[in-house]
Image (cartoon, rainbow, N blue to C red; front, side, top):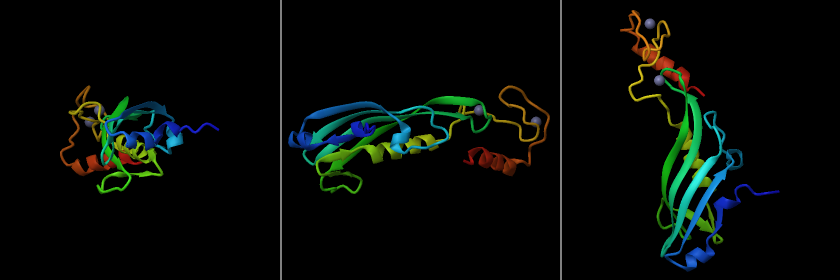
Length: 169
Ligand SMILES: [Zn+2]
Ligand SMILES: [Zn+2]
């Protein structure tokens, strides 16, 4: 069986031996193989990173991209895109930095980091535009497209209830 996560499991022995050496990884990873399950997910997880051998470990920089599709949380219009997050992490044999990921038996495992970042990106709430006016809570009209005569002055709490409804997964 093909190990779909193999590109993310890197033998770091040679890199560690040569500070200054670099290695690039550019892969599309099947989300299921990563264990990334999310209703917004819409394709494969893109990993584009560079590993730099340092004296105290390996610096990992680049991006993780997660394609997503979801309705605008305010007006429910269908949206899609790729959420990208910049990576700037450190892997160390002896994890001196509290934030550093471990290198175990000369292996640098990018899987936990990629999985974690992809899930964080997919959890980010999307709106169609920063000023999206959303739907009228009374008549449901799209307030970006039209206006209505509903009196919504006391419906603040209902707005948050509507948000909760949309966010509920
Ligand atoms: Zn919207
Ligand atoms: Zn209305």
